[in-house]
Image 1 (cartoon, rainbow, N blue to C red):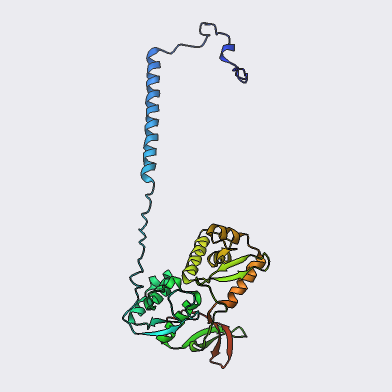
Image 2: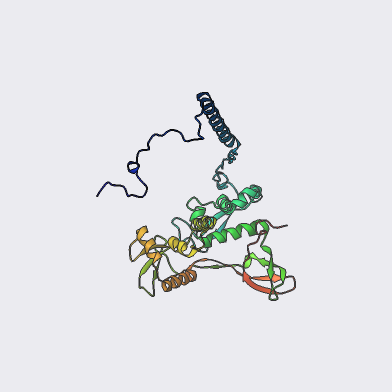
Amino acid sequence: MSDTKPNVFPQGGDKKPVEETTPPVGVFEIPEEQRKAAEELKKRAEEEVAARKAAMEAAKVVEQPKPIAQPEVKKVEYSPLAEPKWDAAFDLVPLPSKGKLYKGVRESVKVSYMTGSDENILTSPNLVQSGKFLEILISRNLLEPNLKYKDLHVGDRNALMIWLRASAFGNIYNVSIYNDDYELVEGEVDLSELKYKPLGAEPDENGLFDFKCPVSGDDLKFKFLTAGDEDEIEAKLAEETKNGVEVNNRSTYTLHKQIVGVNGNFDSSYVQKYIENMRIGDIKAFRKYVDNIESGIDLQVQVRTSGGESISTFLPIESNFFWPDI
């Protein structure tokens, strides 16, 4: 390829030399002293302009607002608050699962009664707003060395939560609810009337259950959600909402926590990939089966209103559940 530049603009070598001529009529030469004075004036003007520019740039730097110092976020340590009250008075509380979902746990567990120290937990706004108060409350009162809050099956956790509330404030729970005419009415629920829902299938020695997918024919091994699983799912969803994620991934995250094996393969990466491609028909059938066999408390209740009505509804957990005005 030639190094010749494209002839867009005339090249300097194409110009003819300019012949020296005498100045035309009417053009006078500038005296040397005036020429030097003009050059000196120009130099001073350029220096002054440069100095002004430098001063303006310096002013901009000074005027820029300083970043606001952010307060250091300190991680609150909750573990001392959650230490079990080993010396407190307790009762034996039966678990809906009868302890079959854990190793070394009996049908009933020791649970201490709530005391004034627990009231301090309930009346601490920071703990309540953090969402940790229920974990702390149950951890303080569950007197079982082999069973921790995060390992509790959700149905068993709900049973302990309701027992703690009823044993501290009584069985009557006042609620506000809409009647058939869409009017907000006051009513009450007797917590002692809530019924346990037993396990609908027997787990294996590891607390796992079997399910055969009706569409694909795949064999699944699964477990029920624990309180720790549920907390992790909620934390993920809250983070995604904060980051503007519009898709609700609750169903997928729940399956990731429940299904632990597929056709004898327990590799977590394989199982997660399988869940991402799981057929909707199998998902719906699996979810229905889990609902049918899962133990817990039947939270379908009858609310008795002051007007003599009896309204069937799902147990509403309102602010006065642990903070009744008594």
